[in-house]
Image (cartoon, rainbow, N blue to C red; front, side):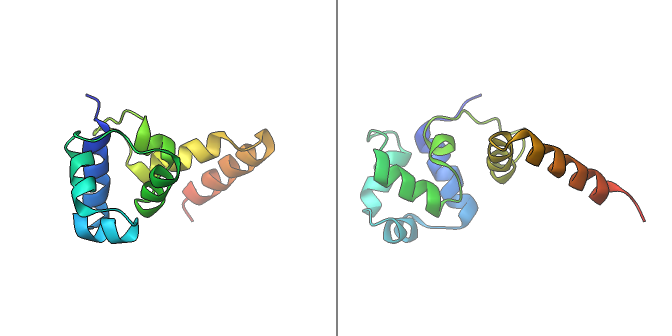
Length: 107
């Protein structure tokens, strides 16, 4: 099941422990506009506002704006980490795989 932008915005806001008022202050938005976004009554904001919301909610613009999320999948931080991992060069990814393998070894 996929989430709408508004549902995703509300979930991420609540996961951060922010009230509508707190997120509004942090993003120079109005509380009523954020409420309208969460209810799907306002269009998805553009560039700068979307980037500001994503930053304050600890996610990426892509994840906030367009990504369909599955509640049974990894949490948001893991999805962001994996997207960043995929953008690394081959050598860096191989080094990270070695680091994970070393961390998984029991002493």
